Length: 229
Image (cartoon, rainbow, N blue to C red; front, side, top):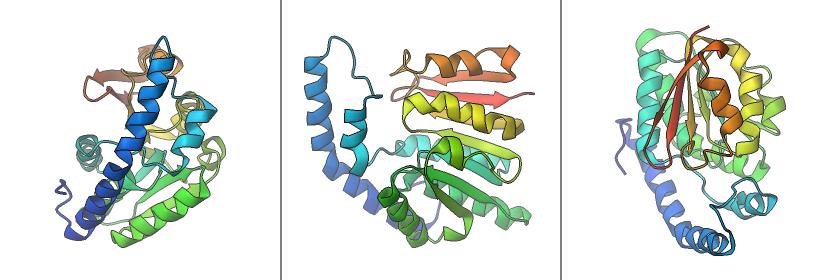
């Protein structure tokens, strides 16, 4: 698996994780196809039944979106990155590589703060990040993101939102005040689950709330927002 990282060690880990995710795809498709047949509208990703199903599944950002997040973080020279939804650490590796590369070029330090409510996933994510050689740049916190992300330790340059939709608005309410002016927020699947994301998009799409936002129509939609004040 080739990525924008230009890092053979990290790319090898990403290739392994991609293969593991592909082996789960058939089960994922069967599960959600069955739900669609039973429902009169698209599957609601917010149910507890769905959460139980994905507890041991890869729910990772698409590689192309991960590449984009790496590039955005590099352009921002991001040093403090927050990720809601670490899962098994796929996107974490991209974010940590971006922070590492910024530190290498410009000095200083940096960190990716991830959060994962499932302890077993958090443990695996930490191991994957270590295998990629990026453990020094990652802090994976276990628990409810509304609590684990209250203190990011300084101004946040970049926030990735890719987890349970009902918590996305509460999480931006917690992390938003910690975002520096010019910080970027990326949220996945906003077009696919437009109704479920309504509270979130109402916030970031209204300039009166201090954000400027655009939605990219790619694989479910990617909302990209900049904090202006």
